[in-house]
Image (cartoon, rainbow, N blue to C red; front, side):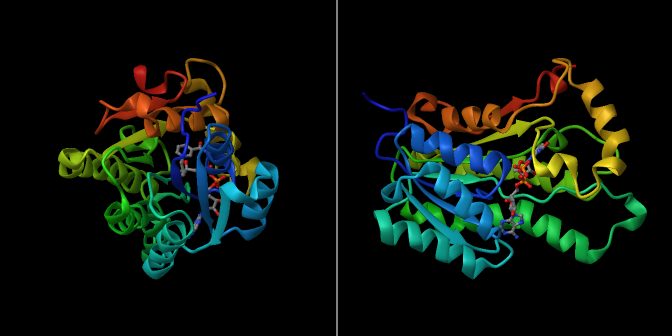
Length: 250
Ligand code: NAI
């Protein structure tokens, strides 16, 4: 049976948890080989264990704040499989802090992981991509909507969306497609935060804002990423696909 990502080579960042882990599992189910990058080694090991196909999975412990670690991830995929067909820029750091508590250190970390890392991954991966390859960036409803407490996070996600459009235009002639998904609130460790009790008022507010009446599951975002990464989306580039239960339709 032909699968949707047969023979594709993919790099997925932030694959040790949440949306990245679900994406890794769906990609291998659809025939891809995957290089899974994350700073979270136990998470990567657990996801590789769930996939249970050594030929199709390689894990790479990497801090995406470090450009040389990013270059090493790309090189590891190329050394193992010879090229990169799909890049999923998913690693991310959430945060909800009042503007008054914003610091340079926090900005460097949030913007470094959420925005600078996708730029560097694209820089290093694109030279190994053939026509027909695809990049999917994980943006957010925060890319386009204001949400209380996201003065540091939201600009990073706005940048991810603009990076998507920018590179879509720059690489269209080479037939390298670049798209984004924009999740609403998804049930992952990022959503609950370090202190779920303290997050409760914001979570209640967010739940009320999702017309579908619930938060999303990681696999529901993974399925959207899978579509945009696959040849089924061959005429789609520069798009932002909301996966938000109607949040941004209001
Ligand atoms: P998560 O916290 O479950 O997963 C994020 C992964 O990124 C973790 O495994 C973490 O170790 C990794 N990561 C963080 N910093 C890193 C670094 N310096 N180097 C390497 N890896 C690093 O969160 P989730 O929800 O799966 O997030 C995935 C993406 O989805 C993020 O870009 C996030 O901003 C985005 N998103 C999530 C939403 C949600 O409600 N969960 C909503 C909208 C967007």
